[in-house]
Amino acid sequence: MEFDCEGVRRILGKYKFRDLTIEELKNVNMCFPHFRYSMDTYVFKDSSQKDLLNFSGTIPVMYHGNTYNIPVRFWILDSHPFAPPICFLKPTANMGITVGKHVDAQGRIYLPYLQNWSHPKSVIVGLIKEMIAKFQEELPLYSFPSSDEARQVDLLAYIAKITEGVSDISSKSWMSHENKSANKVTVVGGGELSVACTLAVSAKGIAEKLVLLDFSEGTKGGTMDLDIFSLPNVEISKDLSASAHSKVVVFTVNSLGHSESYLDVVQGNVDMFRALVPALAHYSPDGVLIVASQPVEIMTYVTWKLSTFPANQVIGIGCNLDSQRLQYIITNVLNAQTGGKEVWVIGEQGEDKVATWGGQEVMNHSQAQLSSRAMELLRVKGQRSWSVGLSVADLVDSIINNKKKVHSISTLAKGYYDINNEVFLSLPCILGTGGVSEVIKTAVKEVTVTEKLQSSASFIHGLQQQLKL
Image (spheres, helix red, strand yellow):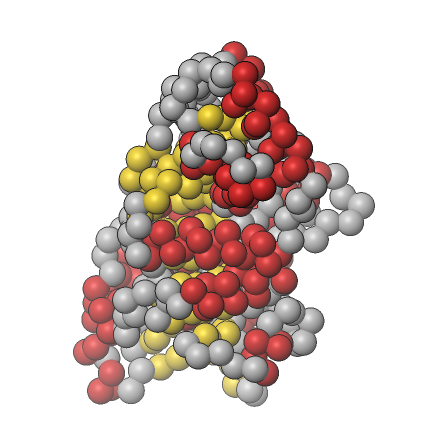
């Protein structure tokens, strides 16, 4: 099909980089001339809408000696080529989607090429070539037997909405065919922390089913021994759909940086989350997302944005471990004649955390001395994987069993301590089945506390502004 350059130019009137986009589309047409172009309305998950150029067609995929024409659809954002396209499979009525590492149940396509998109190195033709290569390893579609077609009506209707640009996460009647577990928990990651969280949650006996998603290759991951010495009700999987209907999803994945800058390492985590969070949020739309990845404040913010969940459903482990330890030290090590439960560690995880004596505007002299001594003892206590795992299990317990217990966890701090930016900091929160039901408004008015929290918020916000979401 001949590329209508002037026609495309007219419909791209509002695109910021129209000429660059047209040049790219010309190259696409030379390699894949059968794609058809149109301008349609894309509806994002937050219900915002935008008229975007899209093109659809088929790509040839060789699989087990046969060539399959895989139908796909690309949405081109108005900031292209500086932002990657949004890509979907477009299955016909007799096709089913094979959910895997690169495709979710909606048919949305996730590839390293998209995650690492960077102009001018990244181009649509290169994206399509990688798509073909990945689909040759695992074919993303299969044909239904005729007896199964009726059962897929709701699913296909849902996928049709998605590929046409409607991202209605509440339209999920297809999920009713799945077996639901009342108390299901998913841990995402293959390292020591993920194993520690899995063991700690399993030991508490709070999950009827526990899924560990490990994407590491071969035996390099930390889950091999768990696989060898199988635990009751624990499933190890690489399939994101195995997480469906989880009440809690725990993120432990971290990018391993070497000589890169701090910002590069954080961006590596963001890139991984961009491929994971939307799909996992889709599979468990009523679940609570717990972030243990570092830096926890920024990655909790990233998870919140990518999931489009309400803020109360997305939390970070924050200063929960520090708070529990500080309370224990005051009561059991220093033998203080006071309720250690009144003390909280809040703010940014790390050196800038702040100890507060809840409910009082200013600590009296003895309380200040006690808190100072306890913080000194706390600083010598390092955080190991098993200790963080126990802390995560503590949070999962409060959610699964609706304990309404107060934890110092990373939550949206906007509106507290005169913080005006969308950042996550640890604050005392009541935690239950739906996540955070209430943020405890402490009466602390010490200038130093407010200044430290505002300083942390400003620093975190500055880093967030530099990340590519």
